[in-house]
Image (cartoon, helix red, strand yellow):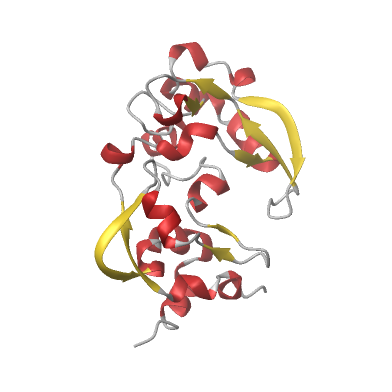
Length: 193
């Protein structure tokens, strides 16, 4: 079995002076360009369209309009291929565009659908949405961009903090989800004491 902890960049064991933003402040700025979605996730979203559709704006309830036709190779995707969500003009959103799944309340329709159905909030959420703002480095390790770049971006989901915080604590929810509780605990044990 693969050691998932080894897929985490040593950068995430560092402490940095940053903290999470709240949805009220960032207003889902990360959703401005849409997201690449693994083909298995696309099929799953289509299979559960009946659960998702009621949480979409009326003009975007047809699943045929949820993804564009672009298909790309992606070494980090389970199937090796991804499709992009449809990106819509949105004058009220950061950057003037938004993902088709972004609602007027700045929540993701996929996440709301899962919660309303009594499932884990990320049940339908694409992998790259869960991962964000974490990313992959050149070696395929899960990492984070440089602090200055992240906290200076007006639409970032991270903000400066008064004192350094371990990055694996800031991203605990994502890392526990991606690694599992057992491997997340192993990762925490690597923190300097």
